[in-house]
Image (cartoon, rainbow, N blue to C red):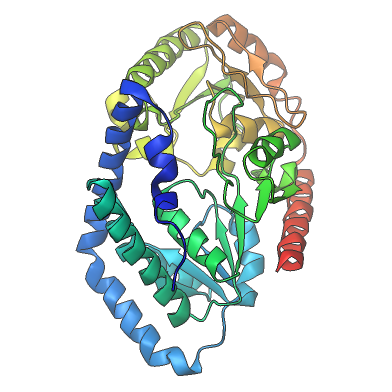
Length: 396
């Protein structure tokens, strides 16, 4: 019998921020989850087929050692594949798992149930929460993951929490690989990593923030694990290349999002007048409608390719800025409504503060001379991935 309090599933999303603004953010975020849930509902027949196949194969299946709810750490997942890896996600992950010689676990039903629960009163929400935990428990039995570890990039939202909480009830190890940066003045009490047994972080500061609310967690601080490697710099443009960074603010604050995009549009015009080649790289959540922002040229290439051709990245608080700076790219942070983000300098990484287009342009003069060789980045990344892999193996 599952003993987890279903309130924990919804704790973060319901209590993140109080007042009118908090309610507005909750409504916006709930709508995003609902759109995804509707798409998953249409694909439910594919999930049912996958479960039927797994039930037929169950007697001959070995026990699995790792289940992942994220594809954001491909280097680590490549090492884990040989240890019975299971991808738990939407039906589109099935083909990916097959190519990686891993198993696919259909997870649409838990996502749909938990999204519907957000539209219900507390009592009905908790009932759906308990049903979801039982469904996840059945999936764990079906895929023989009793001795597995669970890998996530966030344990804050209901879907991931269902898998993490159920894993903890079964004595399984839970691991959170951070996907962003934290800010001490955010007002949020339970950061990502709030529930997990092991947190892989990019800086000691991030680890301390997690430990302030999860004192039982172990920390694995590996800045190089988050490196994005890229080919040696070889820009085809003689003029400096400036990439403006989208940050997906529309999902949490439409007013701030509008102000941020207007700021970038203004800088695009000013930088173009200085002779720069200007690109806008949308946040993944913005890609489907990025053309509506009105930028002259979008950068939709792989991140490694983008870094190989960009002289300076410019944004407000995107994790991409930290990743680019760590890889040796020149990065500038701009103020929005006169305010700089205070959490950008982590683990010895320096992000310049730029007040104007002229400040950004001055950075381009030295940008191409500071790039480390691509081989050095690959070596650092591989060593960090191996250290994280060994830490996960040790923790099991």
